[in-house]
Image (cartoon, rainbow, N blue to C red; front, side, top):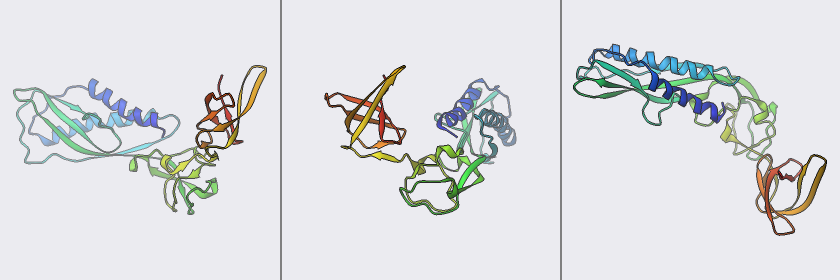
Length: 241
């Protein structure tokens, strides 16, 4: 799952929190309150996972219970909601608040949302800086929400990348575990390329920072001007016009 997909989980949940039906329940009926929270939570999770772009995820939701000793003031309407900065991912909370009663109150239930989907799991050790190949890993179904870093479900997202640190068998390949290979170091003379329909310009400049393939690098041209472009695997910095 990429970062926009994770933000989608959060956005959908908040949208449902704002638009969800305000329900009435006996304030001291814990089972009724828990069911109200569950009725709010499950559709929010299902809708968010259903909208993932080409990545099938299967949700499993575990919801805690309220303390049986809890005594709440009577309330005509109770609204489920997510706390500020809440998210339906991993360990979270869902809240219930009284919106129509003599005394306003809010309670929270612990929630664990697991999102099972396709991933790649390492089957051999990988040294820090070693280039990853598809032979290093095998397909598996894992809980994407078990770690905050995004799962790299597509091989093209990690094959050819370098291990950011020493990796061990059994680890799920995630975004924080890989980095782009370095094409050149700071201070290295590099070729700068720019062009358009029917023409191309090439000049040699000096790299002002290390160049990672696919990322931006700054280069000082012979004229003294500093330009920024994208690093290619052939050690060329491509500058848009």
